[in-house]
Length: 377
Image (cartoon, rainbow, N blue to C red):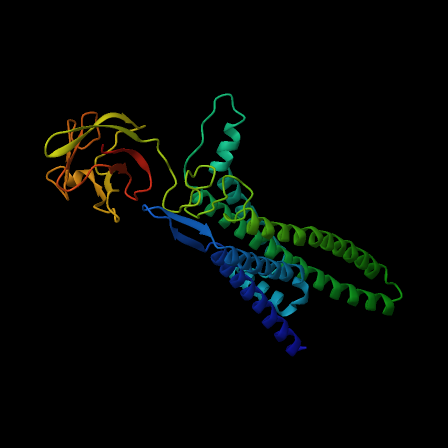
């Protein structure tokens, strides 16, 4: 018997550890991206099909292992008893009813966390906003903080149900023992009415326990599946959670859903006008469109000389760094108010360094967002 119990304990721990490892490795494998240089400083990120398929297989196997462990909780008696003993040591109580109460309280706390996370999530705010007369607009914020709260709540909720399930299993075992002893006593005693009544009461209690177990186990498995699918950014069918590039912003608010470096196009644009003299080209900013004042250190200048085979004369350089002097043949003249992009700001491009048909581009620090440009004619 001891050997069987030890084997069950060992097997249950192995199933749990292997299942969790498969889930983690599967998620990491699914998120693997192929990086492709598309020239002109453009980098494209694509999901690796092979790793994605392998990741789904590993993730599914891990989730199945955890669900199997939950469904066959009664098989691992040694594991159950050890788990119950740990819980009793934590809460300092011995009775099964107090242990069940502990599981109920933990489940309620987990459910509270889930509710708080859902109510504060960008996806829920967007959903509510769509049914209001006054639209709040799309909350372009990261889903990560509320998702963490929801996941913590789900884990606590599942843990509370796990404790409650084990307390019910122990209650059923104890009642089975009492029922057996009651049957023996009623057989030996000629006046066994009291034992018979106890036996009926025990059968009623056992029926209620089995009924509770019937809904707890499917509920736990359902919660595990929901956690593994709905709250997985790579698989989630929820628009406010699905995140193809895992940059923390859901695809429905991510203007660059396949690029983890960028997510928000703030609608910044500059209109440029060109003039020239004997020594240089003068590029004047004639229009600025932006929802806020743009600092000169936010805007980067690139110059690409398309008349040469290799066109990388000036890599992305912040304008505030070339406002005091020339840098590689380029100079920025900042008009008042200083430090901000304004109509009348000028770029001076030296003819001795750059040739006609050079591409003048204003962008963000990555060089990806094109906020305005002009080709020297």
